[in-house]
Length: 357
Ligand code: SAH
View 1 (cartoon, rainbow, N blue to C red):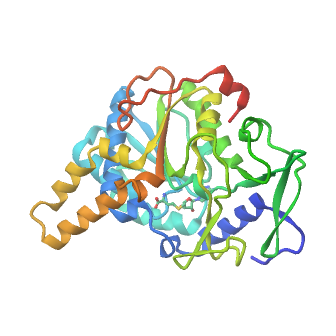
View 2 (cartoon, rainbow, N blue to C red; view 1 turned 30 degrees about the vertical axis):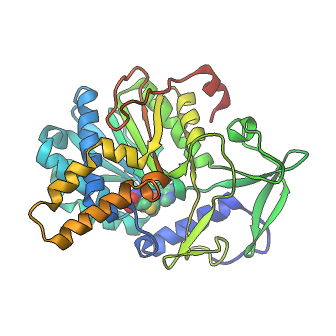
View 3 (cartoon, protein in one colour; view 1 turned 60 degrees about the vertical axis):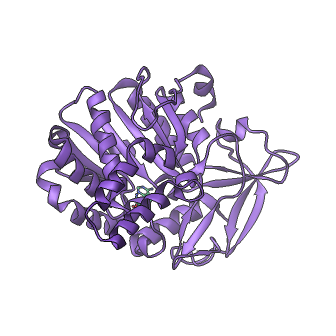
């Protein structure tokens, strides 16, 4: 990708940079995600799928979808667990991967090869293209890769950031997104507020789908819940933080997920939302520590230490356990959801309908 001399709106710059990045680079040389840290992550999500599917009345078949599946590790670990402990759920699953990068689709096909006959994996490019019917959708570190816009609060209204070469320029915003956090948050002058229209569109689509049919969607990502603001755009290149506007396509660009806006958009579509809760609370509730103890049993001290270190990394409050949050979306009226014990679902409300996120 070449730098532009005319201003490019930040979301368009980020979309192009990330499309180039994911289609040409191995993202896992630059960052490590929870499923790549330990098989326990995908296994626990597999257990969540089995319990949730039972709670839906065990629809057969059902769509088991993952958005932004990277190397396919999470789904492969989840399927291995399902085959072993929930064979009826495994037999009912039709796997659909939402992935835009041809290179990562190939890696995912390789990871799923042992399960290909049972779950007939298929690929599509967008959540909206997933087939109809009962569905469970998983997404880990997917939303953070979607393009954001950045608005700066001024005395008069909002400026918007664009990119020229390797620097930001700001100009009064012309087409402000309708509704959403821009309309509802009291942001101090000079502060940046980010919006991720792609994430809100997906949440609204899922909200509508889950209001009308069976299913559940689970989003895990780093982010914040509540009426926050601030510049969270970041880049990782060669495993190190880099200036996000330099050498587009060579670095992974991400932004924190605004779970308050995501939940409001989903409820505007008509579904209920759960959480967000921290990843640490979620994985602990699903039984991370008993699973770690089981994996470490009869192993060398070194392997036992590695398992325990991976568990800590996933749940410790000052590590991924506190930085990452988990939100679920379900049809309204569901009263229980694994991993969200003690957390009441938020029902769709007329206020959310008006806000649209
Ligand atoms: N979930 C994986 C990988 C996270 S990296 C893990 O936890 O390891 C982000 C993933 O989202 C990659 O697979 C990337 O190709 C995919 N992705 C990024 N933007 C996308 C888009 N607009 N549509 C579909 N997939 C996208």
